[in-house]
Image 1 (cartoon, rainbow, N blue to C red):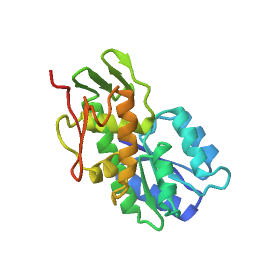
Image 2: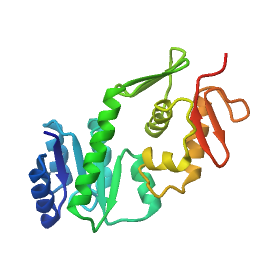
Image 3: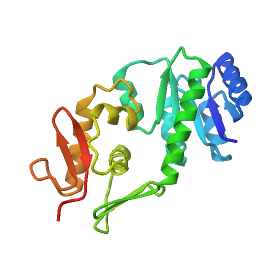
Length: 227
């Protein structure tokens, strides 16, 4: 039975989520403040967190950073803030998905199940190898020819997503939806910047690619260097 922690100060929303998710077979814990939520997370085995940003004691963005300090439990941010820049910052800070208020409890349940499916996919194929590149998704570590790579969280996520589809040209729209959890896509520069950072850490460049290949108007692919 998957466990869900709902951190939401609005009593009506909190109770509606608890009732719906409990009725759908989830084990649900609820907290009305950020500190209460973090304390509950520290003392329990939680599979998914639904996090409101407008909490009475601590801003939800700060709570997200505290949660990431405790581990990699998937977090779905529920917020009334619909600014795209703010959403990008939250996703970069470690949120796995977000939904803008007002939302239906059915929508939250669907997103929880989607996050759990993605987590299950990661566990089934935890270690990926492409040439001399090894990505251990369970340990959140990557090495190149035996040397550890120092990757930011989103750099690692992008590399792991591409490594799970070796040799396949993946569109930037798909990358924005699956890595940054932005289904509307459109932020091509975000992908370009992260690809540039990854190339530097892999010891290559756009002019002389080894692992990462791009095609204008098509997308990005990861492939082992040709011998």
